[in-house]
Image 1 (cartoon, one colour):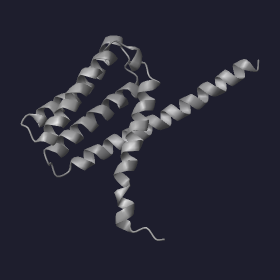
Image 2: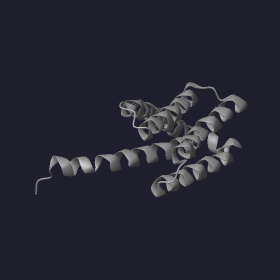
Image 3: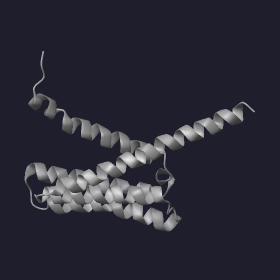
Image 4: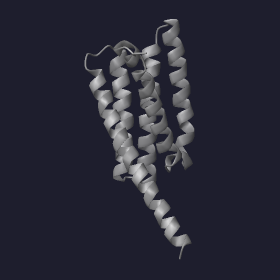
Length: 151
């Protein structure tokens, strides 16, 4: 049984979504952002995105504005978290640039901008760097824990 190119390309968007969701879950779950007050406000951004998506499906006016506000709210809440709690490490700046590139990429894609995929590819590259850093740091923490337990 041979799989055609079209059938293979059908699964590529699913792979992207799984990669993004896994990466975002690991970054949020194992970071300090989830323990902050600013994380509670991200529910507002999620609800605005969901209502905007409903407006888009129903072809009602205002869907693009709601989606834009929802996407940019994540950037705003994370920027607030970075400035308030002074978490200005390079990893946090990369997380902010990842959120910004994904939000801008999606907004430009919704407005049918011709090269919006290129901005999203920048976000993919940043996510790969963040995941590599996460994996390296986790292995380092496990090695330290193992060395402490064996002393």
